[in-house]
Image (cartoon, rainbow, N blue to C red):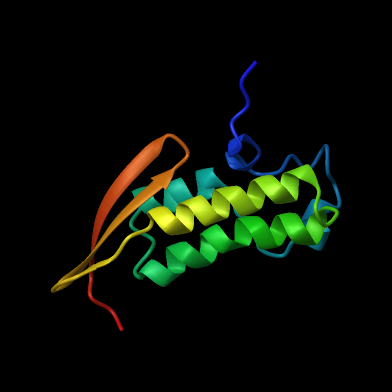
Length: 112
């Protein structure tokens, strides 16, 4: 059986399985949320996408034991996604973002 390192982050944490998650984590982030925000044009800056991606690891570290398997997976996924997010400086930011099994090429107005 194959297990994707990102599988745990594809959907929101199940609060019936982990009821304290909603109390401990103030800003839950998962790939379905990032995908929906990409689909809806929510992100106006590259840093906003990076902010959400970084929360995958910070939430895992806050909720789970340090060095646990889920924290290790979160770090891998975050590192890979932050590497994939590329900016090309011309008159626009061109960003390629891979989220789960989806890949987006976005053109965002240059915002400082």
